[in-house]
Length: 400
Ligand code: PLP
Image (tube, rainbow, N blue to C red; front, side, top):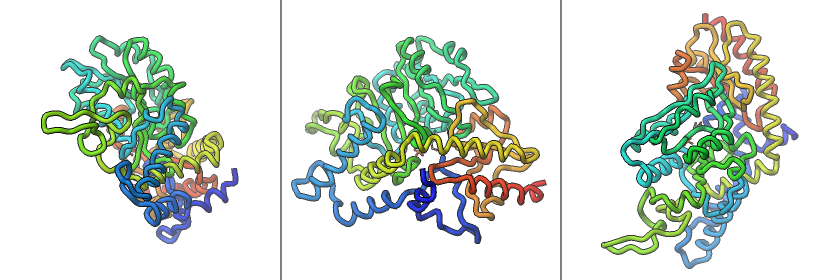
């Protein structure tokens, strides 16, 4: 992998921040976009823009064709059996809300439990609470490893679904989702996997994983904001009622009664974000051109290097030291508040995220207000890790 060639494809990396060249290490929040994606958006709005599916004219047919091509691209990218198992949403949050809402309508009986991991993002906690479920969290060790024995003990005749993340956005742990699915299915319980932090870092094969739902966001994998995916196994999706009502999701409407469109359109009410979907297709092509395995190896090297270098700083504590980790490094130093660390790093051009990262139960687990989080993407390099460490060394005297 030629890192300079990759970096040259991301114009934003030339930005100056407070007189310093930007060092962007907030990739778990959102990744930057390569020129190919930016140009795909511009091209769409310059030459292709039309509402899809309903138009008789040329542009509508072209836009529809491209939109549906991306559905097949996503199918292939995540190893789904059918293209109609891929539903476009606004992002992971909407995908999980869709499943929670429709699944609860279909299967909840008033005495319902959902098993989640103790390290879920709020977007895989709150939708289930809104749906009326009692949450049963899987505890995890100090290192950030799920207690699989405790997991098995959580099943009861009230368990309706297991909802876990593939990769923790705070600890970086890669969870054993295949095993989690195997155990859940042995209890006759389906599994939703939140893949928001996984798809940009590793090969995902939903059939090999065996999950029933897999949700992710385009903007965390080099695609535009405003588009995401809810994959669902055909057998599951056929059983679920629609999430939102409106255009496109119907077959026939009268004032007495409405019948619904076939999959996946049943779950895509209204005008979708067509340009963003096309941008997602270009982002997937970008990842495949570089090679998902190549990206994974590069990021693994950066994570190891950053862990070693940061660990040399006196008083620095890393949160999340699981043997299986990817691309996320959460830490605290001395008694410093994470927000102060983040603000001072920003003055030196280093962008990190601070706070609870929408995982307040993780912070409660460790009894801390938040962490500083550096997270890596394909375009980061060792010099940027050095810049982070040098910036930490510079600000440390100010933190005492
Ligand atoms: N799940 C995880 C693990 C995340 O890290 C995030 C975002 O940070 C989300 C869900 C929510 O993603 P979005 O805001 O793109 O819907």
